[in-house]
Every structure is written in C-alpha cells, then in structure tokens.
Amino acid sequence: MPNRTENKQAIYQKQITRLPLGTYDFVIQYAEMLNETTAEFRHSHPYMELFYIQNGDLTIRYDDEEVCLTTGDLMIVSEDTPHHVLNIPGEKKDYFILIFELKPVKSNLTRNAADFREAHEMEAILKKIRKDKYTYVSAGWDAGDILEQISTETYEKRFGWTMYANMLYYGFFIRALRYIVSEADEPTPSDDSLNLAIEATKYIHAHYSENISLETLAAYLYISPRHVNRMFKKMFGTTFGKTLRTLRLTYAKNLLSASGHSADDIAERVGFSSAQAMRKIFKEYEGMTISQYKNKIPAPPR
Image (tube, rainbow, N blue to C red):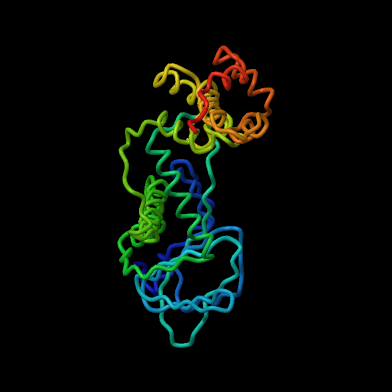
C-alpha cells in the first residue's frame, strides 16, 4: 500500500472516469487513499461511496447511528445519504474511498444471455444497498496488492498507465461487490446458452394480463425489439405479437368455460384493451364468435 509518509504516492483519482460494466457504466467520480489526518464534515451526494479499511479502525456516522469498521472491512453508502467519518484522537487508520455511480446503458445492441443474467444480478445488488441506505461487510478482505498497483501506476505514469489503472479500479470494484453479496443472496449460476426466447415466453405468461408490449419485453431482456421478433421467429416460427394474442386467447377461453364472467371482465383479466378488441381477435383466430364458442362448450355435469 502507499507509504503513510509518502503522500506523493498516495492514490488520488480526481478525473471522472467511465468504465463499461455490461449493461451499466461504472463511473468513478473520485477516489483517494486517506488516513487519520483527514477531517470530514457531514455530507451527502447523488453518488454511492465505498469505504475500504486498509489498516486500523474507522468510525462512520450515518444519521444517528455509528458504524465501526476495522482492517479488511467494506462499506457502501447509498446515494443522498448523509454521513461522515468521525475524527477520533489517537485512532490510526488508512482507508480507501471510492465515490461512484452505476448508470444503465441505453443501447439497441443485441445482448446475450450472460448480459441478461448479470444485469439482473446488478439490479439485485443495487436494490439491497439502496434499501438499507448503507451496506457493511466484515469481510477480512486484503486488497493491499491491488491498491498498491493502482498507486504505482498513478505515481509512475508509464505508457498506458491510465488504461491499466482503470482496469485495476474495475477489478477492485467487482471484487468488492462479490463481498457485498452474501452466499444466501448469490444468484444461482445459469448456463450462458440460456435461451432468451424461452425467457421471453415466461415473461409473457407472468404478465399477459398487463399492458405489455414488444418494447417492454425488449427492455426486460436488454435486447432490441427487432431482436425479440427475430428470436421468436427462429425459435417458434412466429412473432411476439402473435404469441401474446394466442396466449391471451387461451386464457380467455379458460374463463369463458366458467360461468359468471362477462366479456368485459374477461377482456380486462387477460390483458385485451376492450371486449370489442377481444371479440375481433377471437373471431379472427378461432373462426367463430365468442357466443358460438360458448354454445359449443358442454354443460357442466350436475
């Protein structure tokens, strides 16, 4: 790690740096290695802040609560959360802070199954941090080597140092997130060859009664709307729109077989915009009216 008396070798990253992280951009706003000589004031900002304790003890006040960290501990404070490090006389410490944000990437590029899975993993981690306002892990993590490499690259500035330092920041951050996610929260690994067409049909089955569209499904899968239809055609020989209408009609027919449901009620239950729209599509797909279909349904046994 940087020598405590060699401030010229301490990590200090003031340039805003954007690094691609799958379906997110990892944007570093500021990073620095600090010690007990640093005095902080109570503050908040629209970014997350990571604290890693390299040596010693660190006490952070969050609202009216104090969190005590020690060597190897890790903490991430959520956006807009007032906090500050307490300056306790005689308390020696070296700690690394990283102020960052994770910005979703808006892209029409086709994404694979691994992107799809990792996006959901990232969303779960962010949800956990934001729900608790801060996340503290007594990890016993020794990140000295990677911080020393960042310090060396930042100080020596040899050819390619910026790119290499960015990769080191990236590696540090990923390793930190792994410690944040407990084994109980860890997503079950899945095959990278996950079939997105199957995932899409599961989504339709779960949300057919809602106002879903090609665009909402594409956003859920992190792929383009065009790719949704392309994969449907390849896998099932049909389009998203036809699949959605077919499934809605199937669920509508199940309700028509039961008594006590009006056409308006059924249309709303299965996601059609109106009973008139359902009647039109029913006639187009089934070759008969809803009344004719209900007349064909056998009477329930007495």
